[in-house]
Every structure is written in C-alpha cells, then in structure tokens.
Amino acid sequence: MQCVRCQSPDTKVIDSRIVEGGKVVRRRRQCQRCGIRFTTHERITDQPVLVVKKDGRKELFNRQKIVLGMLKACEKRPVSLEQVEAIAQEIEWEIRQRGSRQVSSREIGEMVMNRLLQMDDVAYIRFASVYQEFDSLRHFAQALSELQRKKAPHRLSKRKGRKKGSR
Ligand SMILES: [Zn+2]
Image 1 (tube, rainbow, N blue to C red):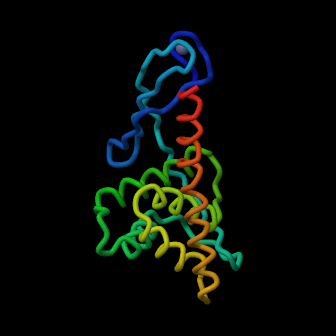
Image 2: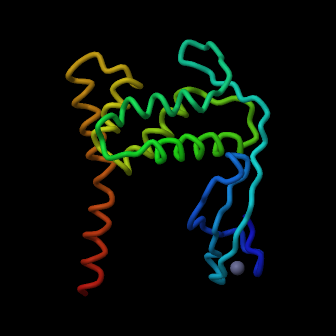
C-alpha cells in the first residue's frame, strides 16, 4: 500500500480491524519514510476459494472450520471466542486478499499456528499435534523444540540490542 503523502511503498500496518460483518478490513498504516499515519478500507471479495487438502481433495473454504479447530486447541486456555473469530477472519482476509482461488490446507494450518504461537504456547502445541498428526513422542518433542526455536529469536535480538546500547 502506497503512502498517501510521499507515495513510498514502504508502509506498515499498525492496526487492522474487520468491519461490516467481515466484508471490509480497516487498517491504520504508517509510512516508514515520512511517518504519516492514514486509514485504508480494503474490501474483501467473496468469490469462492478452494482448499486443497493433503490427499489432494478439494473443498470450499469455510471459516467456521478454522474457528472450530482453534477452539479445540484453546479449550481452557486464556483465549476468548472473540479472539479466535478475529483470527479466523483475518486468515480468511489474508487468503482472499491474494486474489488466488485456491489455498492449501497446509498454508492455512501454518497461518493458524503462527498466530497461536504469539498467543498461547499450550494452544499452539495442541493445534500442532492435531494438524501435524503427531503419532509419537518424538514428533511431540520435535514440535516443542520448534516452539522454543521460534520463540528464541526474540530473546536473542533483545540481548543483542542491550549489548549495542551499553557500548
Ligand atoms: Zn510517506
């Protein structure tokens, strides 16, 4: 999205909200060059999207399925239904925004996992265990170390930042 003032293509989304019953996403953006903040309303098209499953079968994209999968993973966790629904809407929007009529179930699973990773470790592992079909303790251990690895860069970059600052 181009900056409304200086036309720089480098703008950052600082807030996004889905409005009008999921038809429009309202975004606050900030230009990384001149710093101006502006709001955009981006319309979601509702042409059908097909999900390609692991075995090659296709089915119509259904946001409710994402919600149900996440709710199972978030059972008894401090994640609300509203948060789950907002994530599912965002994922749907992200897919539709590409304009492609097809998406793989693997991609959807990864989008969900990326978001759960930032919200709740337990929900993340639960979702991963269903989605990646853990069939052994080894699988589970791999997912755990993956989780640690994904979380580690934040800590590393913080440490680096402190070192630089103390110089
Ligand atoms: Zn600008």
